[in-house]
Length: 115
Image (tube, rainbow, N blue to C red; front, side, top):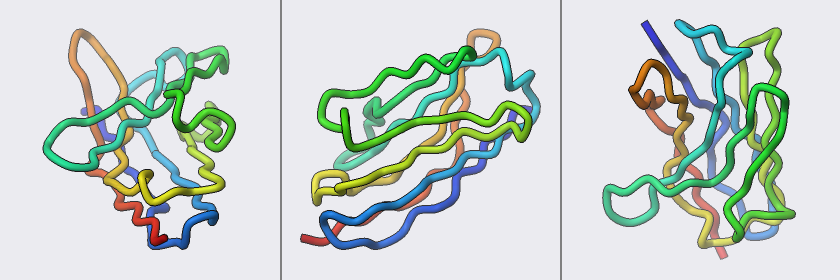
């Protein structure tokens, strides 16, 4: 079955950095779009960044220039390098893929940025 597992979250001060990782299994990883979403307040997951199979990336405006999404197809992993973190980046970060008409999500990893 499809499985996504996030890691790398933690507590950092504003201006600091974290690198999130997502390990995927159960899909032909190299052909799939991968994405990161985050949940701040409430139960909604908001788009953060995505990366296509060819490496083309898309970012939510507020993280542009600070976050970098990348993928390692040989290792079935996607990463989110987060620099210059702000308090408003705090939330649970989820790895996502869309496969056979279904969204799949990891369990999430907590990112807390203190000001």
